[in-house]
Amino acid sequence: MSPSGLRDRASHPAALLTDGEIEVYSKLVVGPNAIVQLRTEAANLRYLADRAEVLTPRVVGVIHLQAGALMIMEAVAEVPRRARHWRDYGRALACLHCVPSQSFGFDRDGYWGDLRISNAWADTWAEFFWARRVEPGLQAAVESGHLPPDLARSVQALEERWEDLCGPLVVPTLIHGDAHQNNVLATDAGAVLIDPAPCYGHPEFDLANVDVFEPVSDELFRAYEEIGTIRPGFERRRELWRLPFRLAMVEVEGARWLGDLETTVARLG
View 1 (cartoon, rainbow, N blue to C red):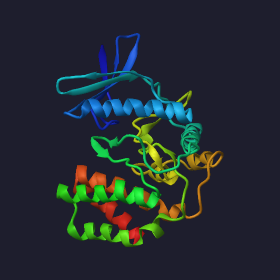
View 2: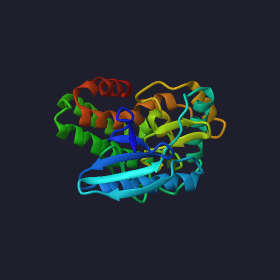
View 3: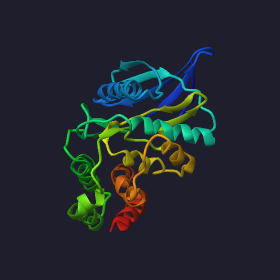
View 4: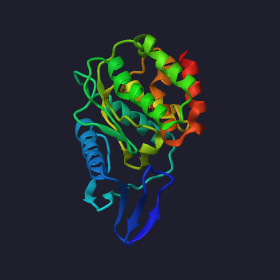
């Protein structure tokens, strides 16, 4: 099979493989936890498709290798993203957010790249978001040596105002958990969701992070509101929901992401 590399689009080595007739997508993860990580991803893709009836790629299989694991799934025929594809994106997220739960969390932990994230259940979003996302991310960023002490203290100080910052109580709904635009593919059939880190959480978490790396079209939000609701105050809370990603990027990639984290903390101040 001849490969077509996708390293610039994925956090792991990935490629489209074809024999000229059949094309599949493959992703390689190395390390002792690789098989668990990829089996979790496969299960999460099935869960989103089953519970929310959104489009996800079909997983052909997960292969245990000596150095890690390889996931094979159907190749998705992407098209250039135009206005209707942004609307597909918004509607797909809204469909996820129509699936409710009694508590915040999930039955299994998830991953952002190689970073494992806890989904242990909690009664409130404020509790879940601080204890499962922000506090572990802060600790990891400090331990990486990339986060200056004064900025770490500024993040920690947010805990004093945490419930007010998180805003009104919200019903837990299914969220993608890593819904930036590289993880939602534009196709003729609709938006195809990949690389989910799902849990039952606050729908604004997905909406705030669609453009965490690159701008998105307002068509996404207009289409979202055909099915879901964007609550008043979302723009004020938007930077708060980005905080775990900012911390993760500092942990993994270092100083070049400190400016974004500083901007987020300043806006929350």
